[in-house]
Image (cartoon, rainbow, N blue to C red; front, top):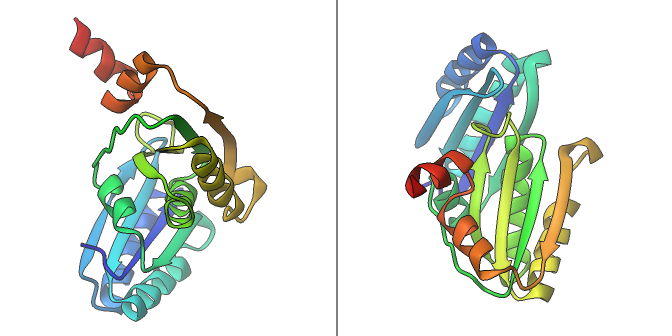
Length: 196
């Protein structure tokens, strides 16, 4: 859907985000644009299309965004698993260990997810963004311990500022019942409602 390039911009101002999204669409032909509000009062703009068009559109959004720009990511040749995960796809495959990267921004989570899944033999269990997380992002990888450790290290290494990382964890031999919880949903409310 977003092949071959994807970009995302996070804005601290909803009004500026809408204005920037408009400028982005006007600057270059974009195949896909999705935008909207997320917690806590931020505005996200996600675009996809040809690499040169996405890059040009991203530049327009950054210029308009100015001081309201929180973070952004540009991924030429984004991994298809990342696109699937952003769209809500889940691969709850219980393989040996679980790796988690928790970031302060959505863009950082997407960047970490793409780098980790490209750099190691892992599955993306989930990429969860912003809502229900206070604007943060989380990336969950599964695989054998060494590969998950590599994916987490690679994912963390691409974060450009130390404050983008909240925490990184690798859990070897995650308990079966935790796999059932993580594989089903990371949102507590979804787990509780299903059980009642």
